[in-house]
Length: 74
Image 1 (cartoon, rainbow, N blue to C red):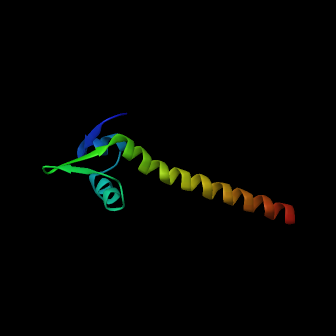
Image 2 (spheres, rainbow, N blue to C red):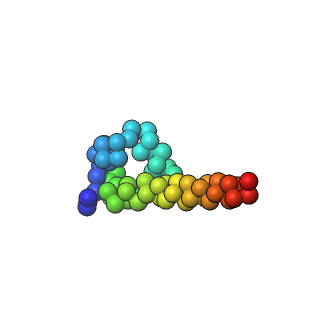
Image 3 (cartoon, one colour):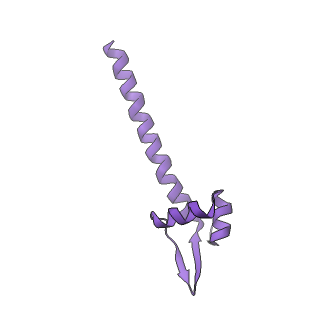
């Protein structure tokens, strides 16, 4: 999706609470403030979520490799 969302719409888009969204902003989700209105790019929301998906994929791969190594040693 292209464009920007206000906070409420961003919450609906990501299916999260306002508290969670504010935490994400505090933790690095990019946003723009124009005359008191906070806007977030849809692509920034997607990218923010994706960074955690990639971390999980890497961790899962590392765990799988460790298990396979343990099985080979047994």
